[in-house]
Image (tube, rainbow, N blue to C red; front, side, top):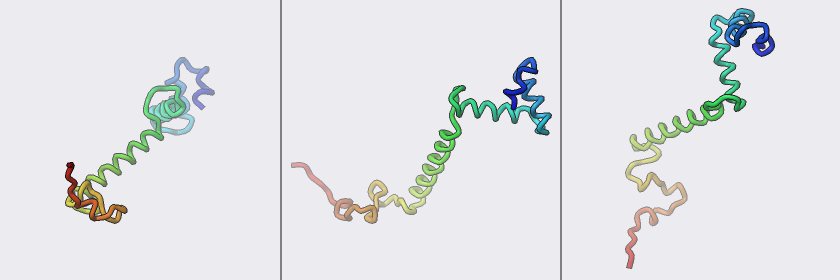
Length: 102
């Protein structure tokens, strides 16, 4: 909508302000943010895409959960070598066996 009315205004922000008033949005900054986000997602502007930001958020949450479990002795227990469990398909003898080189 901003692109459609842009030629009628001296600059983009004036067009954004007019559209915000037409739509009853209190702050033109809201629309400007939506436009910038769309431009980044389309590759027209540098920045982190919405998809990449969501993936980063998910990975950070996963890391925090794994750290919490590790430090609380939960599912990934500290006393197990490298946090491995026998239920991971690794025989207990492999986890406790000591190897010597000859």
